[in-house]
Image (cartoon, rainbow over all chains, first blue to last red; front, side, top):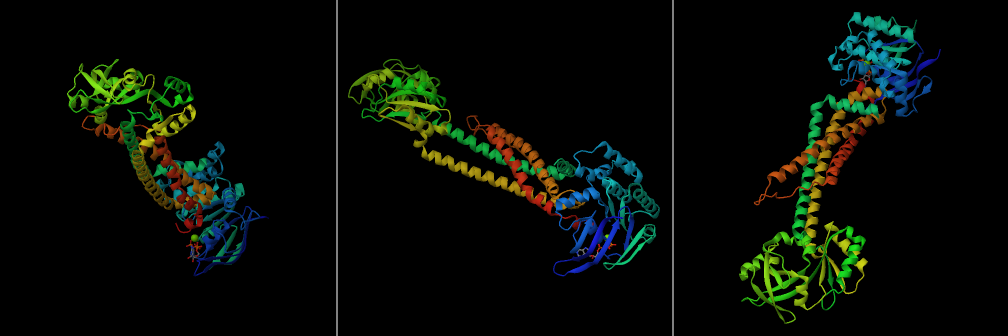
Length: 228
Length: 387
Ligand SMILES: Nc1ncnc2c1ncn2[C@@H]1O[C@H](COP(=O)(O)OP(=O)(O)OP(=O)(O)O)[C@@H](O)[C@H]1O
Ligand SMILES: [Mg+2]
């Protein structure tokens, strides 16, 4: 099956004077419609890896391919369009826009590339908010929601443009284990219904074990790559 | 565009206090700039008006030895039929003749000015400035207030004048005028053209044609085109600007210093806006990072702040212009001279007012350029990494 994202021999250094290497020769790819997790200790490089996968950060060397296209030579403006259409992000720190309501936040990626919100988009937003269970707070400003509600809003936002791949950094980090479980099942359902690829960073081994493939990062290297 | 605009609008509305504060800052700057500009313009208009409002602004004078213009009726007719009349408001012939009032002890020297009162009134407002008596007829004379007081001359008295031709003439005082310039009240006596021609022994001739123009500061240009158009020998065209260089350079100095103040006020305002918007970019860097991660382009991210600049610029310009007009009106209402008249008149120069607003708007947009570029350069990882 084709790969939706692929890293080829990626290295990442931080710092200009004192260079520290965070990722070492990473070769990693994820298949279309697969459901994957990345685990590893704090500071091992998971977020860095995910940011590079999502073209938010550029590797020091190596290649990043999204949907078969090499991104290293692409301009910022093309990367922006690629991100908008192809990738949905759920960040470790959920990051809603505090000036906007939950519903407006969910619709934001759609508005970025469309001049007006269509009825279909609106209905899709409502449906997604229903799925993640935040319909009753949809008109609250982002600041007027609990941490868990914000996180679920961020999940709905990541899905609004029906992206090919969702990159999620600790998407259930702020949730209790019950809700965490629910959200996780929901992601799984979306994966099965829409064929959306998921790459989920988590420190929760129990959750990881429910995914189709577990990639473990230790000190910037892939230690284990377990497909089931 | 629309997206950037709506985000800018939302950013501004979500921090209302801050937005109002910036708009207030711009408004105060604009109002001060507008007030100073209007004040100085009013001052200059008043000054120019009191200097040349009641005098000839463009004058055709004779360069012949006898200092007279022949065929002047024809000249005036030609002038009044020419295209130049769109710029010229008054054309008035005059014959000046120096005389001595020999019937008094001091025999002062005055200038007998023969006028066509219907025409000259538009320049000197003589009809309104006759204090007592009436306009002179044949062999009559209108004398100034100071002259009448100093020589103790009354209406109805007859004076004897000695002309430069060496002949004496009897003139009856028909009235007393006050041109509000003591020097003129002392040195001018007014009469009809015909009487003046008799005294000067210059039948059918005049010494000058006095004119006023619509745009007083174009007097030199009008004078030049006039000289080119009439092509008559033995005359010269003077204008008030050539004769008032000192006043003009004074006005110019005033304009320049007023302009400098206005420019510095605007620069201060622009720097203020710029620094506040830079802070706003820092405040909103999270949001910008998120938006970019979602696919907002660098260009759109910078447009957000250009729109913020434009929006607060429009707000500041409108409030500032209103405030500035309020200040100007208050000043002309409350700053009154001893005569109860405003110290400086209010002249609403709409072009200037519009320009002030436009400059405030432009300065706000330009001030937003640095913040906008910062916003464009911001990369999402900078923000996403660690909250
Ligand atoms: N901007 C930076 N400059 C220098 N070093 C950095 C920078 N960002 C991250 N690092 C380092 O890179 C390493 C990997 O960081 P990363 O955020 O990818 O870890 P992580 O696996 O996501 O950890 P966590 O589970 O705590 O989120 C860490 O050692 C971190 O200190
Ligand atoms: Mg992390």
